[in-house]
Length: 172
Image 1: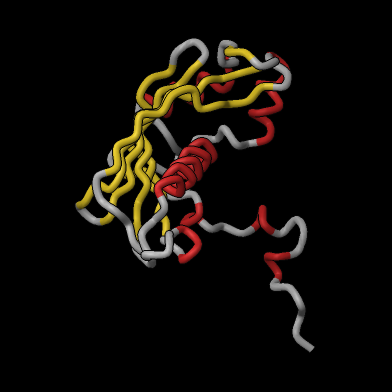
Image 2: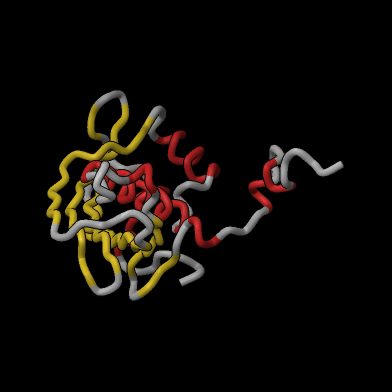
């Protein structure tokens, strides 16, 4: 009788599976995450609903952080020693919509870390389809603890500054 779950679906197996397409990669000093547009991403006309670009960009920022080692539990544990109960929050976002994406398009979300300051990081992102830029955004993400902006702990700052300087990944 066939198994109900494929081997990678068992608890603990995900850490042993290497799926690089899920976290993207580095190209020309920028993180690039491929994203397929699904029916759930579109409105009734088959065009991507504007708020879903924010979801695509959030995924790309998360995968970028994972790629430079910030998602690693040991790094977060080290940062938590310096600043307990911390997190990241989008402080500002300027976004321009140029062209629509459609169901089944294959997009790329490009993330470029731009500036690391005391309690924030500035990131530029683009959603592109081939040579066409569909969306461009300039985002400032604040580091917070206890509900207020707080200096970024040293272990995170080192990783973020390396990313902003182009040293994003051992795979780059």
